Structures are given as C-alpha cells and as structure tokens.
Image (cartoon, rainbow, N blue to C red; front, side):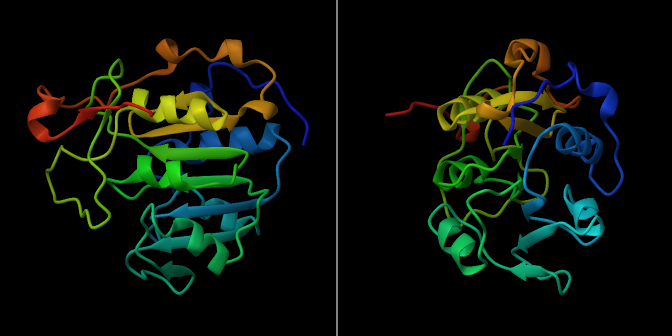
Length: 221
C-alpha cells in the first residue's frame, strides 16, 4: 500500500446516501484516495441504512453483522470484545481489510480495542453529547443494550482518539456521531488534520454530569 495526501478539511465531501448522516461521502472520498483492498466489515447495520451499503452495491467483498438478522446478507451475531476476533475468523476476515465500520451503541471502544488486525480506514461511533476535551468511557459490559433516550453509553471522541493513536491511526474527520481514522502509514499529511479543529459534538443537549451517568476517565495501563 502507498501513502497518500488527503484534502483537508474533508467536510465538503460529506454526502448522506444510504448512511445516517454524511458518512457515505466521507468514506467515498477516503477510498478514492487511499490505496486499499476493496473489502469491508460493518456492524451494526440496517438494510436501509449503513456506512458500507454503497460498497456492497459497488461489488466490494464485505461482511455485515448485527444482533438482529434484518436481511439475508446480514449475519446475526451478538458482538462483544470477547468474541470479535472469533467472529472475524469464522467469516474469514482478512488481515488487509480495507474499511471497518463499528456502530453497536455502547461497547464500540472496547470492541475496537480487542480487534488485532489493522484495516486501512476505521469508522467508529462516539457519543457526541460528551465533551470533546475529556476522555470519557462507559464501563465494559458485554451484555449491554442501549435503551431509548439513554445518554450513558459509548465513549467520547477524545477517548476514541487516544485509543486510535495507540493502534496507529490518525483522526481525519468527525461529524458528531462517527469518527473517521486512517492508518498512519497511509497518510502523508497528518499535520493537516488537527484534533481541535476536527472535534465536533452533536448539536443537541449535552451530558452535564458524566460521572453521575457512570462514565469514567480513560486510563491506559
């Protein structure tokens, strides 16, 4: 794979398509400029809404997983940090994966932490109602299920970014819901992507007392 320059900022490339917000356009802009294998893994996903649905339409080799089998091509799997690599092995996910999209409404941080392969591009949900200058995470709970209206789940963008840096990735875009990372060896101009200029909260009511909702400050061993 060859490292490439990416345009900065990426905001103008955003396009909704089949994704929840502007994720499809950002992913398209990245894969158009990065040398990667045309393959993806996405979890969770809906038949009518997902970050990688357009890649399936483009004929990419891909795997969709979700706790509910909402379509024949979506594998019914309960995804946890403890089983994610077993699932990758079960479905033959290759070491040189192109795009990984993680959106399971809760344990996203811990699942990415447990993944031992290094895709070229990672898209991961963060909790946009949390402050972007604090590394906040919910406790690990492999049985966690989010309930409507609940704010105490997931992780802040800063917590996800600290994990990404440890795993060898650089943040290139965030939209208040998803963060987009490119593997360091594939990005020639990381200096153009500064966290404080990219960080974005979701424009709604913000969590005022994270500790009261069970969030803790991230501390790596």
